[in-house]
Image (cartoon, rainbow, N blue to C red; front, side):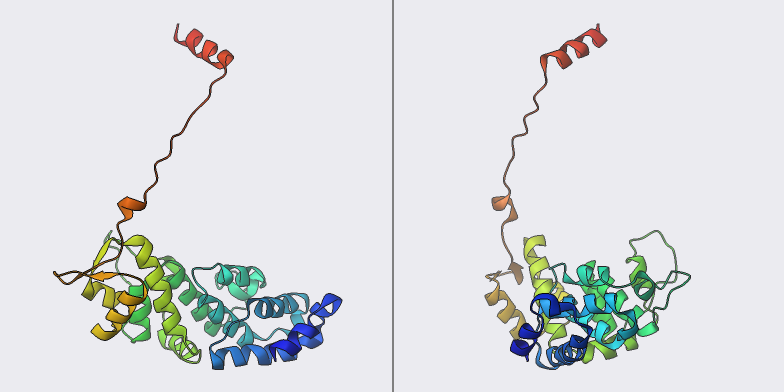
Length: 246
């Protein structure tokens, strides 16, 4: 299928709207087989942009979920930029953003904010939107709008490998954020994984389990590089400064 599409998308035929049928089927295969083709999904979105009468929201939602699996790459943001703002902004007066699309966008906001704790609560059906204003840290505005998490979960469950992709993204964030982390906290950030799974992730990313039960990630102090900043002033500028002081 990929080979056939590559030949169909060559040259001026790339944006032939007749390619949408094959692209939509290809996106479905990506969902079912845990594959990803960035060029194909972006081409599909561009064709929807050029042919709004052929817009297929179900395929677009699937594409957005697949691009979220590519985090920390910027595919999700790029995909949203190829869509009509009325279709992806539920706050606009003329918005045609459906509740299903809204949930996908809010899940995207949660993951882009690296709010893994909220994401896993949503997946377990434990998410409750904040109601009070007590001055403490609050999740992003989009996170608070997840009023029907079951809809978001149902869509995510259809995408093979989505949760594993989130765990992979979380590990990348943890690797550049933490120097050491408690095993229980690591388990929570990865969605309540078992000790055996923690050992697997620890080995995969080159982390080390310490005698006190914590996990050593890396010594960030050893990777910090100092920079010498030199500022050059012209003689005329110095003269003006001295004159103003006098």
